[in-house]
Image (cartoon, protein in one colour):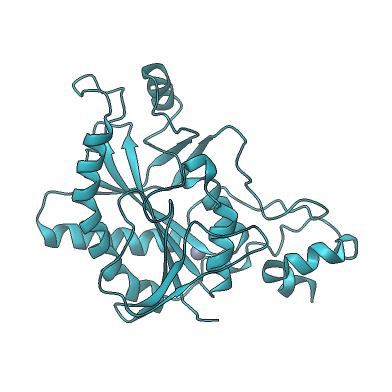
Length: 295
Ligand SMILES: [Zn+2]
């Protein structure tokens, strides 16, 4: 199978990346079903990348319906070690203005438990560390690339290092009461897709980070009209071009950086089930992740 080093999952507004050469479109089947769409594997800025539009081309899949397990598993099958998420988000903080970019460092789960959020279970118990849901090393590389790209563009886009992403179920946007609540519990950004993707990336031992593109102030902001799809889409399209430039700057740095973060050994101390108690069928299904630990 064709291989890639860096995976990119594009969110709302990002369905294609121009400039990728040597393209191969791959249909992948996984033990968790099919990914959101074909994955485009090719070369961008000298790096082998695998690109997947999270919601499918034509934006067909709602956040609650995303095949996140298949998406992350497919990236792992392609040999991806670093996974970048590009995501449209609402802002819960005055200083995170629409069209700004945030590289978040924390997540608050406000989904409703309807999304399969682990590769394990059914005889294999894994409790993985998730105190830092985003890879600190990859975050820093992407933050620096984003800052430099935004500065070079001279378009007034600010890039913020850190922030807490609230993940809500949707697909409806928040009520005002919910928006105030999300601010009170410490949220800085609100989106619908960072989970379970970030959890699954950790279980797959991928470095993972998000480039969050602010499209609106959610509905807590008194001076703003309530969120409309039209407003969100306008800001989104303005930012998609910036996101693509950030990618082109970040990719060679990601590919050449030493990997000392530990993401590639995240499962080492997390598999609780005794090795001999793991059902052989499960070991076989999960070989892509567990193989190196089961010998
Ligand atoms: Zn990492």
